[in-house]
Image (cartoon, rainbow, N blue to C red; front, top):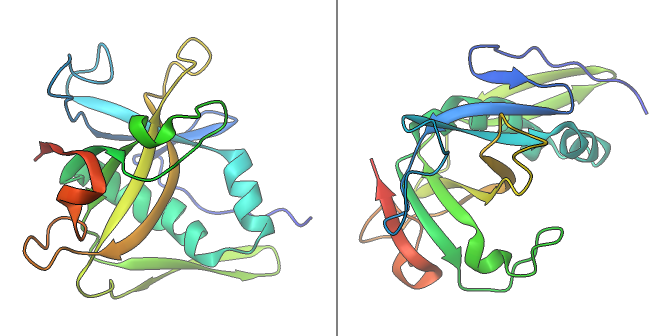
Amino acid sequence: MPRYTISLDGDRLEDFGDYYAIKCKNFRDPVGPPLGGNRPQNIKVGFTKRMVKRVMGERNTFMLGALFGIIPVEMPRITSAHLGVKRPLRYEQDGNADGNVYVVVMHPTNDVYASIEGESISLIELDPPSREVFVALLSKNAKPEQYPEVDFWLEHCNWVDSDPDAPQFPVNYMQRYEKACIWTG
């Protein structure tokens, strides 16, 4: 498999060897203390290089663009957080991920996709889809002693339709999440 290189902005995306981490706002769970432990102002969201390798192997130009063009820029500017999705969801050992996943909402000024030519990857900015918001599904770091720099792991991200009555949120957000709008900011 060819080796790809992407130029990364060190101010936004930190490289920790096996994974990357991005600083973002520390949204709060209304029934508990601030998420992120000792960092009340910010938390860090990580994604593994294994995920990047898989996405590159699939030549998934959307996901590569999201991982390196949207997430590092927009994650610090999340506008709302929701807890739990009302559909079955499983991540690795978490058979109840549907109730434990955090969904954060962003409003990127650009969509980004990756162009792969040989061993070179270029990020290309496009206009964002109209009447859509960008969401990321995050799971709590279950191994903080092994990954102390990460509070949450990025599991998935995508553009989704915005709600016609509240365009800052995903469509049907009050019915779609177990706890809608646990944080806005």
